Image 1 (cartoon, one colour):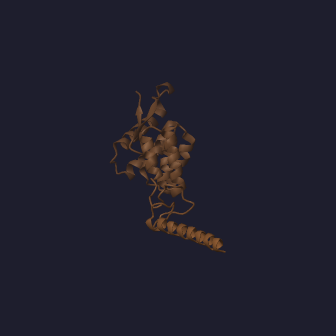
Image 2: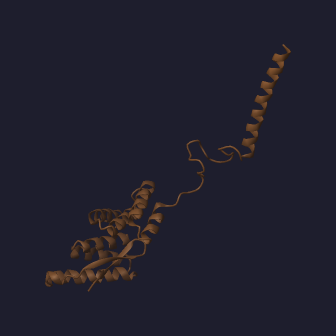
Image 3: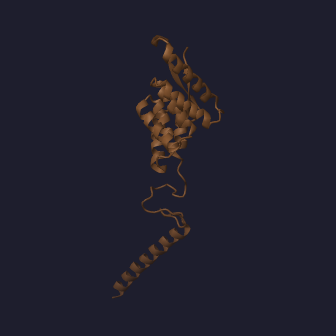
Length: 200
């Protein structure tokens, strides 16, 4: 009987010690996976602080565009679309990335959607003009450059130059022989605006 009482006391002592150790961990906040005073849940990845804000996908995309990593920029802009929805900024950014990747069909559709969303959004108007110039639709490109120039109040030199080239090309299209048509290349100006530079 005495041995059974001793064994029972040892079991009680071990349970009490374990309870006190767990209480100490929770109160100190240092040893447990879930610290007191945080918003962490069991579904959060280990080591991730849910109180921190993630970096905006648009900002990441703009940085990737600046580094000429256009595929990565496109992925970042798609992430931004998932987080923010297809806002005019996201649509224009997606269109710009596709434009740089020479995916003109996708770029045109996205930029037209951006212009529908906000008819005075300057980067979308300008970049849609660039897409149309690349496709040889000089008259319509000229109209979008004019709209971009007006919405921008003529403050951006790149848009003014694009408009001049579009006017010249739409006039040349009537009078010039096909072999006289200059080639154009896209050059980055800022995060989401492009300028056409003639190789002549």
